[in-house]
Image (cartoon, rainbow, N blue to C red; front, side, top):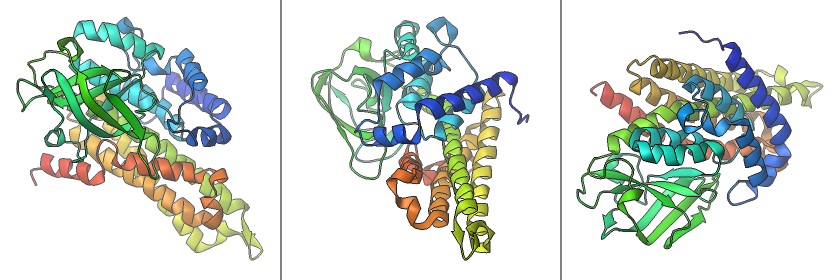
Length: 370
């Protein structure tokens, strides 16, 4: 497993870091955090001009068709912000789901508009029963319409379209993916309350569904394809969490060097060093498990267990890194203007997104026949 970056990946990394420092300063991210959607159209357009939304979109559909590792390098830099907005939801997760579930005509119609930024697409999977497995999807097409609720829809308020996982009308054991315009009659969106970043609830009241809105073959159970699309996206989400953990580590180390107490930097105290070492351990575990998952996925090896391992480790690492960062910083870390709480909030949001560590550990145990 080669852990070094290629020259092209170094270019992506440096370009992304410079762009984020210029366009997504701490002050800008704090302003975005005050909005319900965490979305700014001008910033979105500037990212679209670079072409990052099409990083995984095949060239024939208007994208750059980069590798998953290329995308991971980019999203690690975005995670350092942490840069908010539907970049992962639309440019990674929705793209991978569409590549697995849509027919050729649907791909040719939708993917170019995602790559250009015209469409902002987000999946709607889990519901009030809460869970990321097939059995938790209860919303069903009845008489060519949808009535029900989807929860924890990431970037739901900034989306123009939804990839909604539902039970098929003809076969309730089958899952269909429906491509829905958010401006359709009967759709209501609202931000979820709590310490969350851009997580929303979407309600459907007699929303009309036609056959051409259903991705792929309407008679095919799309669950396995949906699950594959999610699996292919998880290492990129892990990379974002690695970037966030790295930023928390950098903040903590810098503060331990500059904060003076009893005539010396607090970084000289053993207990402060212990907390920073714990952050390092979580960070390194997340980084190396993520790199292994990417390597196996791109090498066409059996990667499911490695992906779930990386997801469990990265979610826990980001959350615990933030906890450790607050311990190092003490009171000042809780000040919103300082910026650490941006990571704390994002780490809590992503901890449960697409499955919490317990979910991923159960998947690992099942794959090992436990």
